[in-house]
Image (cartoon, rainbow, N blue to C red; front, side):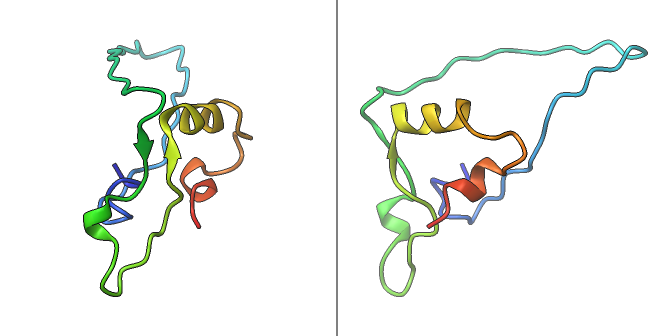
Length: 81
């Protein structure tokens, strides 16, 4: 959401942590657009003095970059222009 809103809505950095003392409950949802669909700042938020903060990538490029990144690097920072 942060990329599509051009930084208006902030996404927290988060990671799952294993804890022997607490049970973890996860819910998996799947909502994948076409691999050819663009993911990037909305065109309506760009222009008239507002510049794009993030790159525009196809969904396939976005997920490839996400799954092949160095975990020490912020994914959102890697998408910044």
